[in-house]
Length: 365
Ligand code: SF4
Image (cartoon, rainbow, N blue to C red; front, top):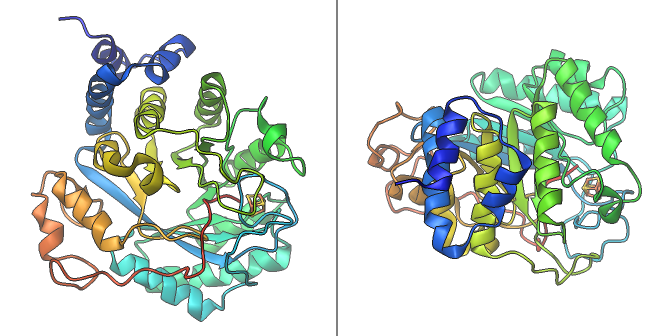
């Protein structure tokens, strides 16, 4: 029997490029169609990533005190959000936090700093941390997320061993001025291109739930596709107190699934990460999202607490997936439970919570 979404998946598997009307059809699908949408998107996910889930771990090197005014961000200029604010972790502290995530199963560590962009001294500081991290954990990927890059900085990071650079487009070009006045969409695009040109794997994604239209979401995802983003984090707005978007609750769990599915249909072979806000917005549908996304952040976000790392690992195993790099694809899901890399026994709590004072949001810079 003809099914629009499975037919769409067939076309994507055959190499078609998702069109705007098709993307909108995914976003505008009904609740009655939701499982069909997920099942069709899951076929693309399985075709490209089998049963693996890539686990990423955030280390917030520098928190708050940013001069930019991104309206979604707890670290923005004038933010009254109750977050931890500090200027640069020591290399030892950064290494200790990264090691915690790696022990818990992370194959990528994301080193993030608030601010418009790094000084050359900041880049040297991060380069030193990366060299140390790579020496200790040569198989772990390192992604840097330091804001808008100036000439030569991406190359310096690449030389130090950085594998990827994150800089999110966040929303459509036409919506960008509504969420930020201190820098432009074009500057963000240029930084992603700069990183890519230096040989860093471009990581760039979006934030849903800021009042954008479905057309804005499609524009943003198509822009990411054109840029060649190799991993796409999808954040769901955490509208924390003390920012202009305080009280903005526009998403439903079903719509979050549709957004993830639309990204999967648009970029079938691209790493798709369910990122900040997944717990509060997907709620009980989080496990279904794993059938569409193939990547997540373990534990906490930059300035807010996620669900317990143990709960994330259980969710992965309970749904028949395995952590990437921790067992062969196709291995029984229980594999990670019996030998989990947190060094804990099954059922024991993983000790990866931090960010004590946070109430806030998602990546950025
Ligand atoms: S998203 Fe980045 S640049 Fe924007 S306010 Fe937050 S830390 Fe600053």
